[in-house]
Length: 607
Image 1: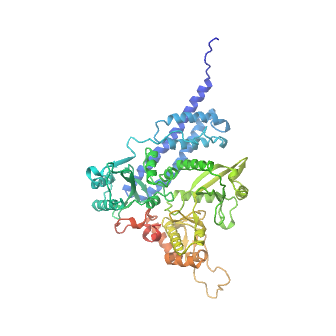
Image 2 (image 1 turned 30 degrees about the vertical axis):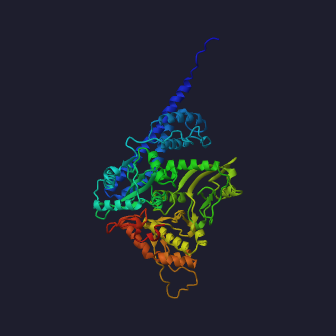
């Protein structure tokens, strides 16, 4: 048989060159994004040292939008530079499959490969048709392992008290963060931390050979506090902790608390608060450390909490698809009173609810889809103070029609025809919010005993107070718009009527003029579009005498305009208050004059 030369396809080589160039462009877009992401954490450290707390808030809010900006920039660059390669539309799948192969090769030595994969998905989805959203052209499943990644400087530092004593270890772990501002009374702070460690560690304590204190190498910044995050390791036992550092009124630093209880740590790392600013060269190493500290938190939640919310969304949806494959129950309407703005459904075996904005919103709400989206975006960017649930926002989500209860798809199509589309065996939802499912407060109160009612009403008022302290008026204060978390905290989750506190006008109802017939129902006073009359809250909210009595015991001042006016004045004078991320009872004695929202809000803050 004569020898036959191997055929070469010049066009295939050209396609590989184009795929490699596109992969490089995507990776450059991600690297630019992550460099800016890390610079935000470094800026937070500088702002904390300078006590520029408003600047920390601005950095945290701006960072949320960085990812979308870089992804849009990168997609536009590829569209512009590689237009002739067929990067868009249905015919682009084969090219993007090649791009993905080249991209995986480039991630072999990358320090953030999991986040880079998510960025690739975001960019390619802007160019591919949704029919090709599968693992050949996207990272539906991860391609690069992160288990043993670490930075040149390890993600955490270790201190060995057996060598030089616990006193030296605690001193070093605080001072090694090299904060520029001095501690006002480091001897006092050191004594507080040492005493708290000795109190929180189990007694009697028999020191094993590997007894050590491990702390993550970067501080965690949020609002007006910095946190040292670590764990005490003794044999096979690990005891997680976080140390809160704050500024005293005179400007010096002080240690405010040591948190070690699992519930305290879970509340500190709740996604219902603003995301932390933390510098991570290898985010997977930080997440692995946190998962050992917080076993009840998923990786998706932890990536979100440290500001990598886009990868958190990716992990969440992977978990959700996995759950769908291994469950058989059906989507159904969420329990509680039907909303006027949102259609809400849930999967009973999965602890989340799915919310779609209706096309036709009740006239009493005076809003539309665009304004509702603006309110949800406001919440995403704002300090949620632990009192507003975090939101996962998705577009073009496809779910199997067979998993919907009879009639639910048709109901959703009737309520939101522009948002819900059926394609064969699949239901496609164009825009959707996903939130953790909670027990609606109105349902809790329907069946509550006296102690549960007292606690729930106290927490309800605390939620209203703490939101007001961070410049949020919840708007619709009906019990059905609040939920009770697994830790017993009351959290707000209906955002279509929220307003900034400073934009509201809180008034007392003036007395009626002489001769006015109070039975006529006529309003004798002018009402502006932003006017709010707190004394009316009792009429509409506290119709059950048991709820009314409990509310008056804890929060009677919320029914009077002056409380709201004083809160507005405090915000205008000093900015939003600092709502503590941990209960008042665990604090060391803070310096006199320190202003926190706890001054009038944490009646039930240990919940």
